[in-house]
Image (cartoon, rainbow, N blue to C red):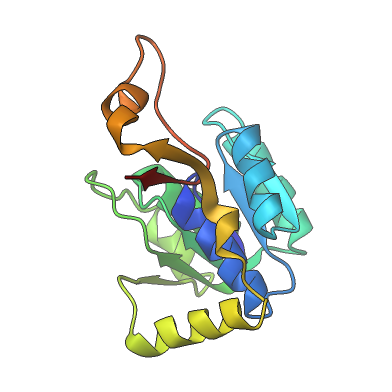
Length: 180
């Protein structure tokens, strides 16, 4: 399984996949810090992808996955990530998109994914049964939810802390908790 994304949803997905018995889990991020966080969450391999390196990284991932991923979990849901995810799949593989972007998707030419028998699906939310299973993973020690927590902010400082600085993009490799 290859997980695409840079934030807390990607880290949670990596941690849950490992807790539920995923043997080979890889993660893709735009930054080395994102790869490091994914490895700390349980990813066995991490790949840094920039728009310029996408083709080379896709080849590297297909080699790592011995012909392509069985499943790609896209936590971004952008036009670029959907196309990249399809490119990582082995014939018969499945792309599951859980991230939601406002931009419309741009699928690769139909023949690129239809001839390979690729399946695409979206997933949103969870069922009570899913929450019970996750809590059981936490109780028995297979899942450590702290791996997605990358910082704690005081509520009084939140506007200053989260305000974008000139020329600096605001992002986090995981989730930030807010302390009252």
